[in-house]
Amino acid sequence: MKNALIWGAVIGVLSTIWLFVTHALGYDTYNENTAPFEYLSILIPIIGLFFGIRSYRALDCGGNMGFLEALIQSFKILLFGGILAVFAGIVYINYIQAGNNLAVFSGRLFGALLIGLLSALAVSLILATKSNKVD
Image 1 (cartoon, rainbow, N blue to C red):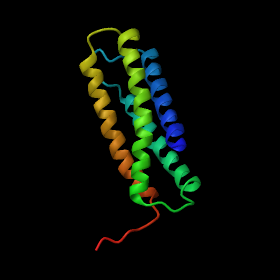
Image 2: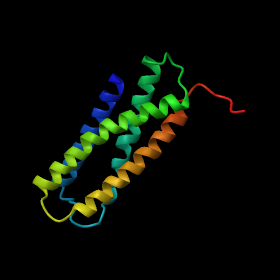
Image 3: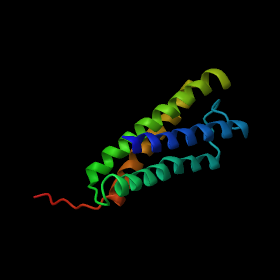
């Protein structure tokens, strides 16, 4: 659980920083336009999950981890990171960029959820070391 909290916090803090940096650069969520560099934010959960699951495999599993173990740990990491990112997004929407932009921001959060789930599957497949036969 400690590993999930640490790497979830890393993903949540980096996502929060990314949100405020894009705001400082003048890219807001008032409209549905997305700047091309905003797609780089996809790397935050991918890299965070990769290093989090790799750390979990090395420290907690002794270098031997199955796909399901990796997937469950990925979901834990994403849960903690998502809680932080959503809290930061709520603060951002209500206090920093107050306006009628909840629909656009919720669409971006849904996109982040989808990216997180796909990243969890990919990282779990890449880092799983135990192969289980299905008969």
